[in-house]
Amino acid sequence: MNNEKGKLSFDLKKIKENENIEFKKADNNLPNSLWETYSAFCNTSGGIIILGIEEEKNGDNIIIGINDIDKMEKDIWNTANNLAKVSYNVIGNGDIYKIKIDDKNIMILDIKEAPHNKKPVYLNRKIENTYIRRGEADKKADNDEIGTLMAMATPKPLLLDNFSMKDLDNETVSKFKKIVEERYPEKNYKNLNDEDFLKEIGAIRLDRKNNIYKITDGCLLLLGKYISITDYFSKFHLDFFYRDKDNERWKDRVSSDLPNSYGEMNIFNFYNIVFEKIKIFLKEPFALNEEKVRISNTSLLIEAIREALVNTLIHADYLQNFPKVKIEMFDGWINFENSGKMLITKDEYVQGGNSVIRNETLVQLVRLIGIAERQGFGGVKICKTSEILFKQQPEITTDLRETKLKLWTIDALHFREDLSVLDKTIYYILLKNNQPLTRKEIIFTSKNTEHFVKKSLANLLEKGLIMTIGNGRSTKYEISFGTQGYLTKIQMKLQTLAKLNNLFSED
Image (cartoon, rainbow, N blue to C red; front, side, top):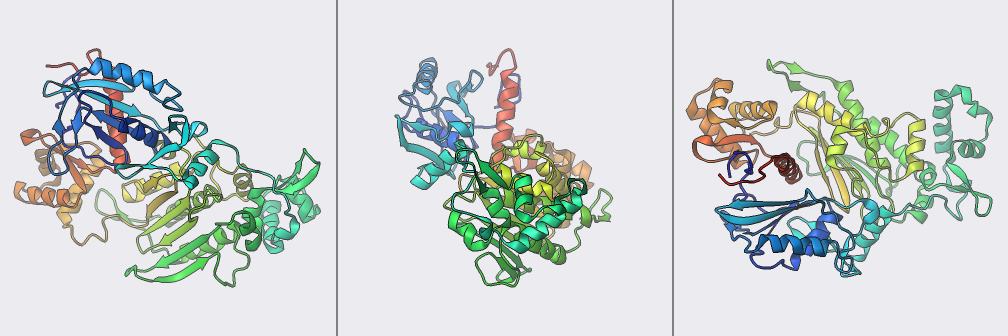
């Protein structure tokens, strides 16, 4: 389809299924599997269901068409609003699009991720009929995954029974208290003993049901003894690896469950140990500016790394029955992984201003010592730094089990020996323009010949670094997006087209 008014500017014949896009044949009736996909998208990261097209793995998708599209739309509305079939409806008036391809009716459903307090979204009044998205497939959630979805919807326990000051590490509490005293001298915290200090800052709180002071879960995670932490958070695990260029074996490691000389392995100590190691191992970050002059800003990158490390530690879901926190540092990038789904969208993470906190007390305590960014803007700092230094965003993936962030510490293409200088030049031209370009425009901007530009474009396409839009002389090139990025792009175009008077009109 072309870019004429009312037309889609992406080709549904070319798109393939992934974690956010699903095709359904649906020529006569709604397939039952549609609602499994609906549940999976609601419980994961949202997505788009395209009805009337059959995916073809090795070629163009097959345009089947929908025989009675108005009836099918009515069936969708009736089922989505029927609590006996679907536990929660996310489909709104602007989320169903009817278009024509090759004179055949096609329907697109834009399925938003459900609010956390409405998860899990399940079918037929049975919570065991809860689905999540795994790659391009819908998977029935197991008991652990259903429990995680339910935990995201309800407040976590705050006050811990049967824990006391004996479960906190005295040395860690003293270090933490000293930092807070220095930051807030007017509070006179130095005149308080450790227990009264922790009560004053909300780390220990009064249970008003029985008038007994109890340690909060956030306090235990930040300042507790490792054994005591694992008594409550049985899967608590923190890991840091530093790997050099060969990436085969780690050169340094900090692990919460290995014997070490660092003291109790709580969040406070792990953060301080790992952050110092990262600063030692960090190679001088560099990138090239528009004049191909090397630029460096170590302090800017270190601040972004600090923010990513803190976010990884304080936003992990430590009650999940899955692996917890892992930081892997390489000579060129750092991978940050934690358990649990990111509670805001990737767009909200990049743009800032919105924050959904998994453990209020933990975040509150970390802010007291000044290592957490003001609410909702940590992701902005990380992304802007990456863009300034390396002209690209960090890679972010998130699902029910875990969230991963890959933060570059040098130019992302630095290690790509399979790319020529011209390959990299063209890639950065497309990256900088942030919009599709024709081959002619690329030739002009790169100041190179058609022969060599054509060769480089073919190589970049083969490596999956760029993608094409359109065919023949109208072909344009742009940076390849991740599947979530591609989904966002489609949704934005759908929203724009929805504002047109003659939405998806024919020629």
